Image 1 (spheres, rainbow, N blue to C red):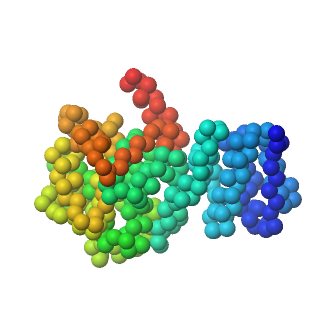
Image 2 (cartoon, rainbow, N blue to C red):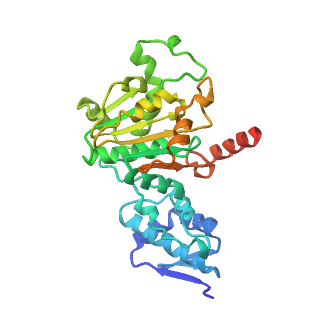
Image 3 (cartoon, rainbow, N blue to C red):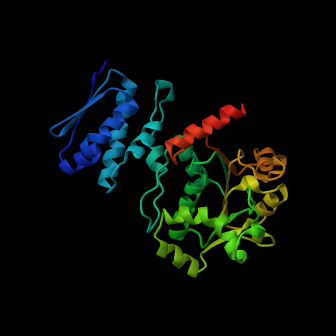
Length: 320
């Protein structure tokens, strides 16, 4: 059995980028894979008697080397996400190129967007391969963020003419009528999360330019009634708060050349009666319809903050 693997570098900048500050990246890899890593001179040695661990290390290094050559500065989160997708046993041996294959490169964007988990990678592939994609998962799993990243890539690559973002306006403890301002100002807090996602992905002046040319539209779901959406990307966020009638109305707005992404968290339904949720109803009656894709994210896919994962688990345990 091999005791490990040694990788030699002929470029100090490449070696430095892979190792990270104070060899921090190597310590993260050790924590993810086990084994023992040493960096001496122009070589990195991974010591392990685990054949699968050695293969995982080799694949991770190949990915990191490619990322550094492309101008990336791999972070600890990037490496943890990369490790999550590596095969952990011989029976789980898979092509781990899915991690880079699922990368989202947005023209004029700040950074490449990578999936943090295998489920997120499959979600991205589902959006690419299907006209209508549902994604269900708890808070912090990247449902909306990845949907908007994919849509912006399509929009700014000129693969679609328009991006439409919509949400149902449902109060969660506050009444819309008592909020200050005119209708546009009342609606703005409901749509702000969509702006937050876009602003973290592309410069504000690009968003402004898209709004000025009317190539991006953000509107409440109620404004979709009677419309026909053709040749565009449509994202319905917070779909758990749609009624059955609203969900049917939205799905029947989708016209020729349009792709739709529907995201929601079935544990955060703010409707008076949960059994009226259009998302739950759609899951029940549409799961077998050919051409639709359903992606499910779980607590293990939470990427927003490690504490969020623990909070969700605590709530789930109490409810059980």
